[in-house]
Length: 254
Ligand SMILES: C[S@@+](CC[C@H](N)C(=O)[O-])C[C@H]1O[C@@H](n2cnc3c(N)ncnc32)[C@H](O)[C@@H]1O
Image (tube, rainbow, N blue to C red; front, side, top):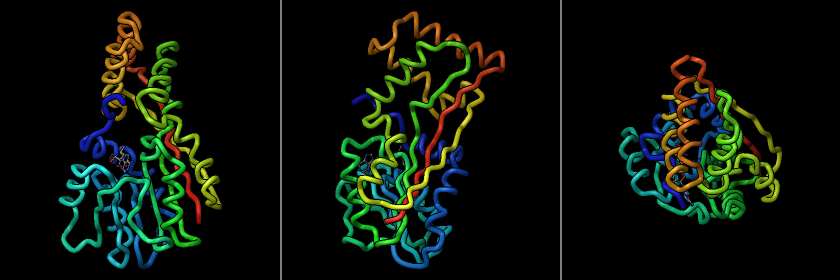
């Protein structure tokens, strides 16, 4: 597996960019008056803390992740008295009783999973009947650059979806996972994001870093890499840089 394309700083940066979408994804949980909600694959706990602030202390919000260093950031950022908890666990074994949870949310997790069906079944197991399950994913195959170069874009999408990311087409399979696991009232919303500078594309998509990785691993020739990066820089300098990517929010009910 290639180097991870996120870290704590990346999660904080993207949270600002994605705030509207995050807030939208909290909607199915707003009626929760008590009990526990899980944010699975919570990273640094941004959504755990936001949801907790939104829902108040009658509801406990629990962040689960398998990376203890990211969880530690969440623990440190929690405000005194906030009704939150952080648990280190694999997503395939959620440490909660069957039908004990009021809601479950997972953002940009399913793309990393080698066994997505098992994880969605596990999420369904812990949910009480009638309660919401919400998934948020980046559709990497929707990445587009508008500066005229097509072949390298196709190779970039192929590298991201087939090699770099375990489950690179996750966003397009969410409804299928939910349906197979027996979730109901499945609804899809697509949020298109436009990046207007090379800096934004580097900050949010690590684009030059990934192109460099592709060159090192011979997925791109020196010439292809140079021509593509020169095209990106020209577009940026001449102020017509444009790149877009979709993020998908799929909600459902057990
Ligand atoms: C791109 S980050 C998203 C973090 C957070 N949901 C957010 O939106 O800020 C993906 C997270 O999923 C976690 N993760 C990946 N595979 C996992 C697994 N099998 N079990 C538990 N957590 C996992 C990673 O450690 C990471 O924190």
